[in-house]
Length: 332
Image (tube, rainbow, N blue to C red; front, side):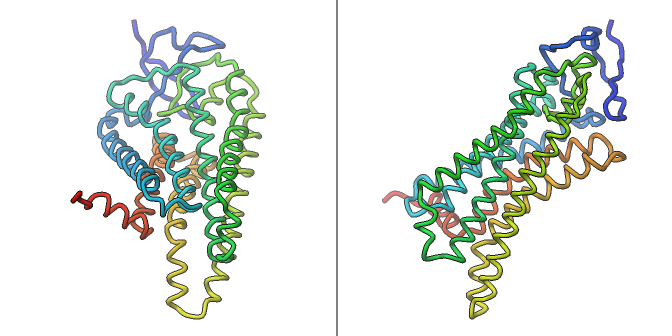
């Protein structure tokens, strides 16, 4: 007979109906149980509507960016190559979580294989780090284009762009791989219930009945090494860009030059603001309801992939012109 059990997680008591087999001791669980958004189970179907809408826009927008850049030889340059990297990263980042989240909301399919959970965790953190690195590369491109325009084509050659992209992939994978190794070796002897809509590292390791301080310390190191260093280089790039802009002789020239950076600035804000807000509420918002933490964690992974192609499509004249041409062009 099924009974109502309670799972303790960071000060929250989470009611969940489950069989006795889900709470017996184990060290190597074959599956985890994702709860979705605890406390808002009755609203799961309604929450799924904006989630699905945002995901659909992200898929459509990023594939459109990739199609436009591929079809237009005039867009085969560093800025648009980095934009394609960003689009691919956004597609992977949103697809790594949303399909499973929607299956929880719509089908009550809460089980996830242990290996699949670790894989999802790896993709989430790896591609989040990659996206941050790509934003740094795009800031570098804007800095060279504005501060050293005559040397732009020689500094950012295609081979250099390819090496930067490869470095971002390797950095993301190598920094996140220890998370995967540590999470795999922990004994999970209390419960296999994850009070979240996806397998997030911080939440997952708290289920382990072992000393997880090494994971916490490494997580802080990665946070400061990736986010801190990336934000520092972006800030330094834009300080130099603003100095170059304000040294231009006319107001029209300053406005026009700043306009070339506005789309990238919008993308930076769309990525870092939700990430920072989610981080602060997670680290310091002990009195914030659990469902709000989880909603913000989903916003962080879903909203930037939706906004990035919209921002670049609207603010970048070359992409906007090609987009209009793509949908209005008629064969003669």
